[in-house]
Length: 452
Image (cartoon, rainbow, N blue to C red; front, side):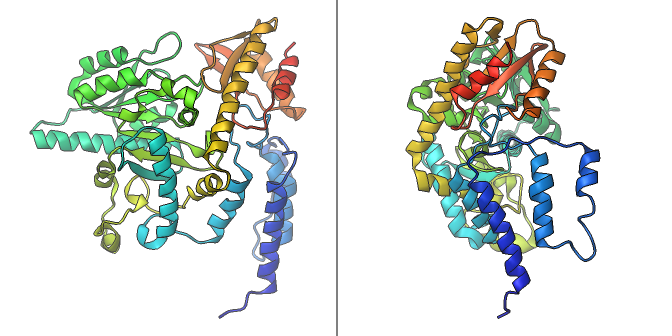
């Protein structure tokens, strides 16, 4: 047995000391990006033949590199879709890294895989999926959507082969005109076509619009993607009517719920997601509204056997894994090597209980409604759309994109908040994406005051 050197102990102590202080910050710094020139001046030269030592490297990160990164867990981080990991999830993420766990196979990581599956099965039940549904935690929504669509196309190909039908010259996936950009990205990787069905005036996709696309493209369509909470507005498609159409035609239905599907944990919100229980696959990103650290997307299949056929990699050195009936997460998505990225969420859920999660999500929904009412009551401000989940999109009357950008830059420079302009139908707009339970009504109204 080799003794651990004093240098190694000191290195671990330096890292854990910083991690403890950062995890326990009472007031998380917002911080802001630095220019390449400034970073080159302040941080160059860290990679040397002899090394600069643990303390100097940690100090460089803490004092220069970290402050050049906007903190996504700051309560004033309201752009894109923020992240607000619980303290338990942050702390346990260190354990996952320190434990040298390989999360790709049952043989090598059965304990971790079991714990991840506990979370996936709980989510599947919350979404109304049947017993036997299951999946895997992947990097993010883009990989989750890609993996689900690969499984969908493979199922369509096998269906054609069994029926003696030829495959189409070009496969087609149908989605909303307001679907996330990752659907187009996945289609490009797969070399398939995307057909965008028209949403209604509120941004919601309905079954009638999908049916028109299916009539037009016929057997070339291998999947339909519905959105459980669009990124820009938080709008939930009419999933029930879309599911009725896809089930009648035997077409795979995938739900991109990366941001919004977590709202199903709130009882009063479930009617808005009617039809999710009929999906063939769904995704939800715990690093968004389930308070886990980056990066984690829960990908769940109604029937995981389709994913196993599509994704299991074959190689001589893998025979010992693939020739068993074990549940190997790497067989369920576009990946082989994988971190057990679902464990921080498992630990946080086990620590706090599911009711805390329901309450935290409901808080965000209620706060969005409250600040939307405040916006409507203020002269010079107006809503672009009524919020459905926790995203509020609004405008400052008479402002141009340049006005919005200057205002956004000033907010960040003053370390008040991070609110970048968005756009809708060619119009520049503002957008609050509310995730963190630490975001308060007072903080939001203070930001609105700066628009006067």
